[in-house]
Length: 358
Image (cartoon, rainbow, N blue to C red; front, side):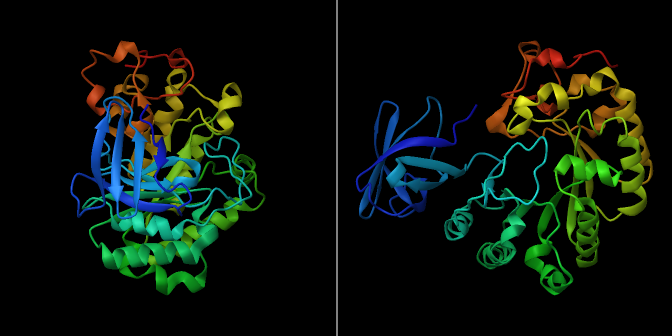
């Protein structure tokens, strides 16, 4: 697993946090001044800092958030990776039973630093934005995206949101180029209202979500509908496929994804994880129904060998590089370059009946 938070020592440990790009060029961010074994020293006007670098890793070009008081450097944007997500808040107004980033009541406002990081990003990068629920701070988020669009029109964003905080009064703003240049990832877990609300831990959530999706459609926003597979919602997945096909034809893609063993799901794994390879017919039916209706379907976090051949064209290499791993059985697999692999912290790989479907 790739380390994103690295120990660091600062010349001025009392200094305020700051954002910089790590560089070999003295005029382009923090300049690499020295290397000693596994540590690198970088120099800025008035501040030098030393970072412990994981063996074999390369930090040059990374945009980092430096926190002198806590002796840490966080790699917010890795120059060589297509998987960079900025966490704007840990507050949320839902409590999803499998949440991989369990919410907190507190919020640390880092929008100024996040915007600075965006402006330093490599050319033509897609930046993820997540939480918590980012739209709890809607105006700040919109402003960050709008100002970044003016300064860096080459960048685009992928924002994960429960879509319950869009309002009619947002329509004119949402229709502007900056916010239309965003892919909005929105979760919908079941066609049944009660089941969806039970999964997200909030009464009335699905009704609010559908209202939000209608506003997004009117604004012409690009929507990635996201459904995590669980024991609770796997059997009725074809019903959700019918709902998506009939009521949400405006979405750009329906992303059906396997569960990540992190956050709440870590201790509830055996109550939540469903082995789709043991009963692939449900997944086949749901994907067939939606795709036949013209819905673009993608399967995320689903290893190549765990689905029938007819579903393999829907697979995407979706797991971020910093948390992706493969089984020892995968070493000589010819499909490895297009397979999602597994989460680094996945339970026993034998959870899947690997190679069984054909």
